Image (cartoon, rainbow, N blue to C red):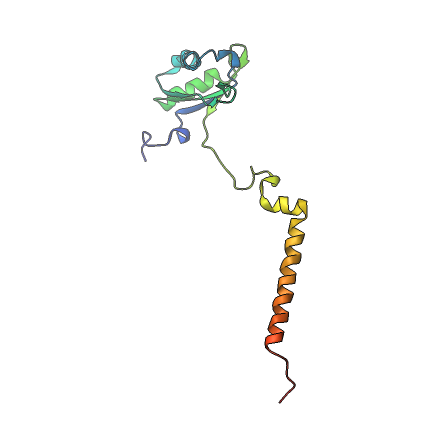
Length: 150
């Protein structure tokens, strides 16, 4: 796979920029212009993505920048990691693909089983299953009476 076909977040050209000041949020165009101006000295920028918090109407405080060349991205990390922008210290590093570990990010109360255990429903269900099993056993015994050796 050539570097031009590598997914953005797995390439050495994509950067995570954290610690963006909320004061930069007059408009999305202002935010992107500010970030572009701060990072353009290190090389041509291919794209800038700024995740939004739509409920609050602001950005989430971080952005992703993709450079055309990986060496430019490395230079940006060297120069901008720990630098200040609008009085806030930036964290700049290689962007990582989102990693989801099944179950590790899931709250215990998000499973149906947890609710059943907490409310006692699980015990009720187990008791009902046992009763059904006893009823089934009883009905089988009624159908096939035990006979003494004939």
